[in-house]
Amino acid sequence: MATAAPRAFNWRNLTTIVSVMILVGAEVFGVALAAGWALAGLFELGTTASYLFMALFSTLGAYAMLLLWRRAVAVEPIH
Image (cartoon, rainbow, N blue to C red):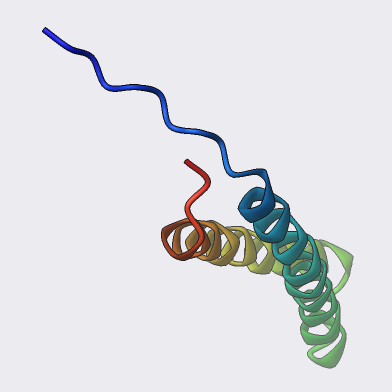
């Protein structure tokens, strides 16, 4: 029985995807932290609420980044 030959790793696509993830990730997490700080400050909720909002928005941002990774790898396969 023949086995499938391993496919070559596409470094160019991986470099492109990682670069996009760094660029978009910096913006997503910057917005998440700023939004948490701004909402807590706007409603005068205090430091604890600010950190909770930041954590919540950062979690949503991490999920968005995961979705972006999956879609980017589907468009630019690395294998």
